[in-house]
Length: 389
Image (cartoon, rainbow, N blue to C red; front, side, top):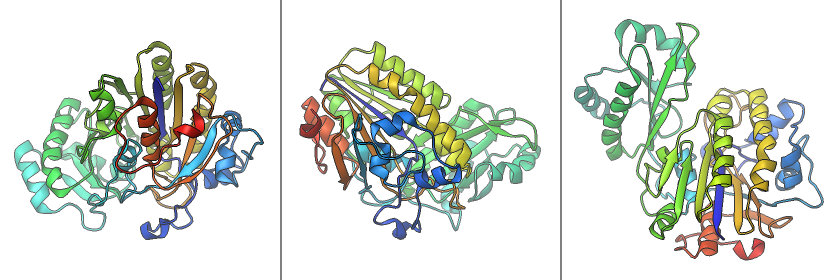
């Protein structure tokens, strides 16, 4: 294998995982419920690829006799259902201890007060809420006091929202960097800068969001590839989720269309051996967390429209992996992530039509790329390279 392209369709779950009830996510099905809510999905390229074959009951996307890609689904072996753990695992690193959450209590004073003292900012909020709802609840107070809004969710996140006219973007990022240093000892997965603009009652979150993640607790496929002299190019929030570790270059994006265009450009122009790793965030951030199945369906349709361009640019020694990090069912009455199986679609070489079944861990992807590129294999993971080479 010369190049591996990994595209993470953030939050595209394909049905409740075997341990979903342990996370209060029994019955979740991001893809299936979205399809039913909109009267059927229109995804002709995903249908040809075999998306209907791996789901089993996907309205508008039936199974096909001869899929153009290898198809399967994967269970998460890591504890939790956060973006960081999902991305780390597909890169070969399993998280055994769940990252800390503060959904019921808010963050303790022994964490918040040192951040306030060091930064000079006093927070308002400090409770679990939807990112859009909390702006409606506290936006006016934020304008009146100049105090940043602190909130969390069911995920391991310390989120700080600020209007760009009240707290400039650079100051918000510096505040988050300070928070990151203090959140490490509490094992909080991500500190997230949530800038927004607009007038009271018409706030709009921007694509200047930044994730300041806990550093991976070990080496990943990205580290091994970089150490072997390969190019490792992160697109979207990959740099944030890995805290820059294992990357040789990275670029942020402004939405999924920008991310897809940057990925197409990278495949077409970067001929050097290595890994291209993309996160497409809109399905999760813009639609899943906002319980918007119509928007979710439109976001899937956008990705579907780019599949031919992505596949056509692959060389004879390239493989394209399409997957996700967790679910986020936009019909379940919750704005939080869901513990689901994720899709596995693989294009290139001799992958077409291969049934990859149900995999026990995401890091089978890392194991497959490691074998194909002659890199150090993850401690856990079963390669399927011999099935598709």
